[in-house]
Length: 413
Image (cartoon, rainbow, N blue to C red):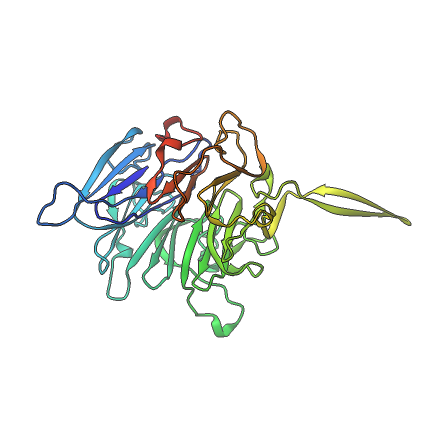
């Protein structure tokens, strides 16, 4: 985990997806507050880390886990974005006119954004030179998913690098046989007409999973790319895409989240849509069936077959019928967490590790179930943050630590 302090306004990094079986390597959140000690009337920022560190992902030069936060960096430079992947960490620091991007941890898949070298690890923060600011190029936000990384520029252009074994970076056919991308490259939108071939996507939100990604542009249009074995791209088929493709059946998207093989989105009416792998009830639709007809001579036999995947977004009727409007949603590997406009948290999907937060009950849930504890206050600023099997809640920019639940082990809950 990573925590950043110094300043006055909450800032949050996004949690990446882990490749392990047990839980996340790191979770990123950033909060800026005024410090007691001030030099030259300027604010100071500090970076605290904890959790698993066997791949130097804590950035303190040690290859060991930490069960309590330790400070690994002091700086007078503003920190605007942090993110954690499976085994690496990213941070953006510097003034708005000259932000710099640093990375540390494992880099054998290219996720650190530095040229390939003998040692594919960074024990301490290393600047990504390819993302150095210029008069027309400045990074505003970074993110990570599994062994992949992304950066969003001030002009809303998206750059990707890292693991590309399933073409999850969306870089097009020129990278079809490139499993590892060590230098950040611009995303290549896949337009249907030649007239729009070179038009750049203006990205508003992005969610990167281990083997696929989703993005929303400034018009609320949803795009997907990468692996599609379970229909998780939402385009109506199971064909893999190496460039972003438009999801035509869902518009006006405001929030997106990705799990291991499923996705969730909230539209402008605050309704929830899910698609992809249906296992363990992670989509929240209950048990779905499709009718199968078998013709034998003059006889037509009808039977029902359980649906195991959805290749297009489907509205979660539980919230629509119950007139519940949602503020936020996040996906773990095999479960989903949502927070409604009243601050109530709902969970569904696999509960084998207790990640649904229902006390001693570790069963799966096919439909959304409200968590047993009440919110501290009614607020629109609740956010859900999920890493594999560990969900958490952010309230007014503060990580709500008394209610962590899920797998712990060496992850430093």
